[in-house]
Image (cartoon, rainbow, N blue to C red):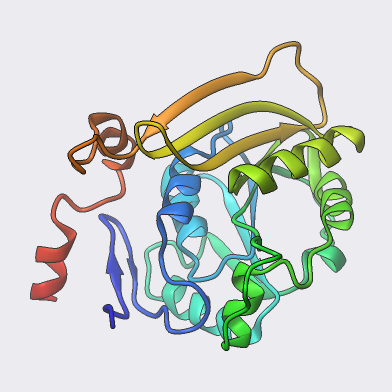
Length: 243
């Protein structure tokens, strides 16, 4: 059983008992999601709150809303945020994105969504909601994103390859257009995830990038290390052992 905490350079995840723990997915999305000086950001399905706090670190002048449908997960994320230096910058609520509305629109929206809808469901109801597409129909999800996004804003999402292509097809049909995509490989030739950004404005060419996390010997690549340098401790396991 792993530690219930995970330390970053500027904050710590102190509670991660409910739902998914801090994952490579969420860290990659938090690191790659970008927008020029966003005033307001929204993190959908915030889980531990890690992406919301990564956004707060990257964009110190932004206000960030973080939502999750599971009440117990919201309490966990609220604890983590309250014990961070970003507590005044982030507001968290127990909300379903399909019914979520604000008086303003968002410049930047992130989501590490439920997926693996056809995979065997696990026992935990919180984990079911976190990793299975139980309550988030894609067509309604896309409609909600469009209603919350600033006309010039950007939506960033991470999916496995199959789900990513399915989402992309439905998004384009709904006039939500891909503008940038990262193909993530755990090792050369081994696809892991796709992180794609979407806009209400179509572009002539999608910007494609490849990110390889480890080389063939299993060592972290310089590309991955440099991406996570602002967030990861140089030796997280050593730091945790002394905590």
